Image (cartoon, rainbow, N blue to C red):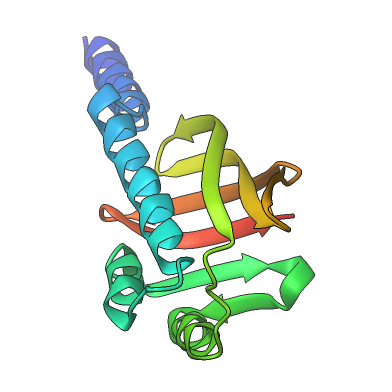
Length: 152
């Protein structure tokens, strides 16, 4: 009898922990919505008439301990360092409207993570230039972006 109770308890513990790790449809949809908003707000920043408020809107999507990792361009950036970089780029005219579109080619949504394949479309000498696609990994915590890893 005790073995039966122990078996039942173990079964319930195992199945409840398995179910707790599944990403539901609504969970995946919410992650998709945050990633779409991130790219929409970044597109706005890349335009000539963007403002500091546009930058602030992107950073509202991030957790307080957010980090941005881009090994090709210097490694790991804290939220503060990345924010200051956005502001500096804006003041120096780095956001000149040459980004015409950010095309999302593919997404894989998991539990608190999304991997995106995207491509920038830029204006170069009065024509459109579609860049090579690249990969970005987003990690989430409490409904906000906690980490971004760039793999390009």
